[in-house]
Image (cartoon, rainbow, N blue to C red; front, side, top):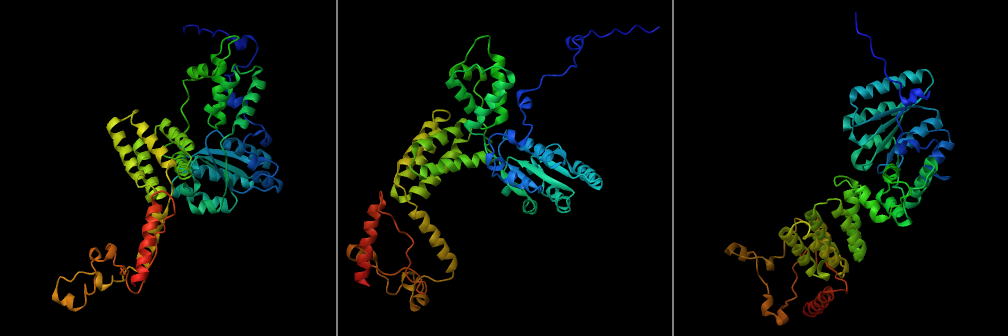
Length: 442
């Protein structure tokens, strides 16, 4: 005789006559139910937004949503399907392969025969390889699916040109402070209680979200879990409780290039404060300081050049100082170099001169230098006129002969045109002086 099976003890939910259900995270509770509920993307969902106009025509073409995490790409795709009465099918390129794609395409064809179209949402679409991306083309062209791909990477670099030519790219923006505050207010209404934060701490919490709506709500939920009855946190307590969430910044992706571009342009624009801010952002995110030092060297030669020749010396010294001191002490040397570059006189004259010379060299690469400046190590070369008529500049007045050094068919060219700034003011005086002497002696 088998032992009698023990009956499970009724749970609190069963005893109360309720169906048991795990609590939903706050981001899931606040997931928008209509497109008008989506915050922070008014440029595509506002009255004159691109998607609003598209929906007004009752047609929907394939789309690529490009933007950072937590900006509503998945939610908008789902709501688009609802608004256009399309069947919503979702795949993730991280977990899907060729077999999954074939299955999704076959199901979409079957639905189409019954009069139902399919919106196929592919998250992280950039993770599909080129061949997998090409597999979308036939089903996009014949209308089997309306593809909506989501990516955090620049589509220009990560997606096939053929796929991009068949889809419209819509850019999702990071949520600004106003949009993040709307989320907090909505969360408070849903939860029926205020966030236990003073004004400063609330602003800090918004900045910690770094434009990510999902992160903002997750952080808010963590604050509610941590607060005791009647407790209100200030900014310092908030950061202690949350252990200061790390910035959202992928060093291998767009964030890397966006921030280094912002640093470079702040230096070029002579704004040391903005330059230090972006430097700090990158260092705080764990960027390789030697990568930053290399970029500073580039800034020194491209945007400052001979307006301040010390700029290049300072940058190389900062790199050596970091090598010598290491982290974190050596980072101050890089910060000093940023300040020096941002406050130095600016000139791209050397950069432009080299570019112009390179173009001229490519166009006239086969032209021989004038014979008078060539050496004549053999009798034959001497008889051919090599070195004939060369004037040794140190023997000329002012150590300047004024002779021409360009190939004769090319004629004299001017590539370097220094501005009247910094040390190049002195170089300009020298060039003007030599031009005057050249004119007199020619």
